[in-house]
Length: 352
Ligand code: IPM
Ligand code: MG
Image (tube, rainbow, N blue to C red; front, side, top):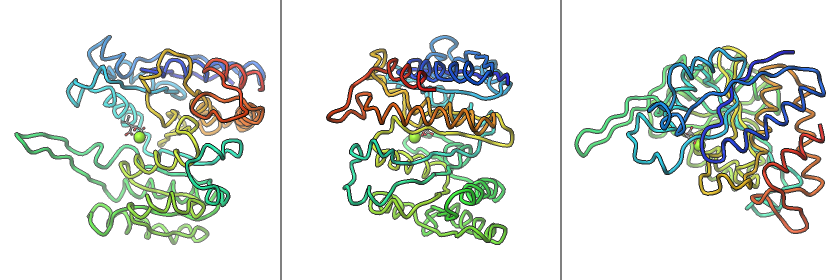
């Protein structure tokens, strides 16, 4: 199989972690007889420096024209003072919208080898943590009108029934393939958009009689994630709630550095990125954890290229390296061997 992958290394630790994911993809290509062609795309702070624009149209087109996009991370203090619509993050938002990837899938799963790294009590962790957050990605307050007039700033949170329905279906379908429990998270005691959200979710129920739907207010959900994470199978929620809850969910699994994500829309061309940021404080030191990006590449193999066997091989290689006791600094614990970003990439690639 030949696939063309657009690669956005981005800022901070982005180039280092993406480099390791590519090493792993190359190993997959070699072992399983595929060809992956890579096209570099500039986005984020590096694109602001180069073109004065966090995602020039020509760069976006390279992504839309590819079979899938692999992204490291964008942003950094250096660009903190640029205007809102020119920030590195704006490049990412334009990319998501431009690719039409409305459905963001963020797994929160505890790796048995890393159970010690969770900040939760052992008794809670032992109940199990294995759920997925399905986050709506191209609507809501992120994409409503933003404006500042004098001393008043406004951001508009808007959802249409159609936008809610299409992400709702992904939630139900994701639950159908797993434990068949879907929790719809909103703030319907305050927001109109959430009342619409809840209504649309319940409207979908009868099409998915095998899935049990429950509702939860987002503030309660934030609490339940630390109190009793084992209760969740699939959570479906709007853009900003999903942003916040997915950081929380990642932390209880031990390290945000471990969590991959996929973003898909109407086609198989997806966007794959770790959920963490560009960590400028540790950039260029070869110490960042590349596993979130490597697992994102595995998701690309599985969801965009239908290469399940290859994706399984990457995930098994990560398991193996962890079982053998190799750790980057963020997941280091006693008795383990600390390795660098590139050593971690080598170890995983070698085990495929
Ligand atoms: C994420 C990030 C982004 C978001 C930022 C960088 C715009 O936090 O992917 O979770 O808020 O979606
Ligand atoms: Mg976030």
